[in-house]
Image (cartoon, rainbow, N blue to C red; front, side, top):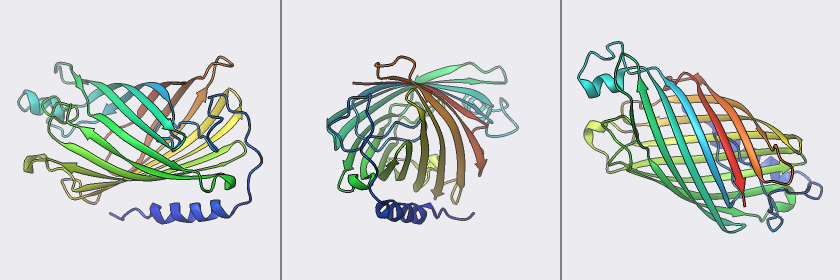
Length: 289
């Protein structure tokens, strides 16, 4: 399958963004980020390039198609993983910004796999993630933020239950950008996922290239509309050469004026590639300190 060429497009977007004239003075910021030259609203499926101090609570739902037509015909473990299933993940995300340029983030997910074919429901802590995020404001007068960081996925899951992994460590360095002009925000991430401590029977990918882009528009102080594009290319393993793309429309609301609490909802729709899920939805609460 064709390889992704988005990194080149992202670089072109950065060059064009830097060449634009400086935007007008920043509008009021209800989240208390007056000390930062630029701040970006958090998308739903894509990360934000802005270091934040916040709590986020998510409920993700996906309908997994299963791994084959013989669902439930194998032993208990094989039938569990092969059967179509409803997959729920509840995630608590905590982020602390040491400064406008640097933050640490911890994601604690718990997932529930509810398979069809009369198999029992299972649940477990999923892959716990710890990340460091850096932002550079050298081009803030042009509305442009550049940054990057690294994220670690810890083996807190369960291979037997098909929820995360109990031995694979994931290392994911990334670079990102954010461009802001008036009520419009454009955010992009390029990340490389590298599994460590995998076993031959895992058939794990050698590496995964992930591309995430979010476009968000502030319709009103209490309403944001956004659309996200999330892509992945797999190198090595059982899915070598796979290109998978998803498009994700969504919205965010701030019901109470003066309270930095946002409610977000979105749906992720597969566009091509092997369908690991039919449709994925998210309902999120954001609270900024």
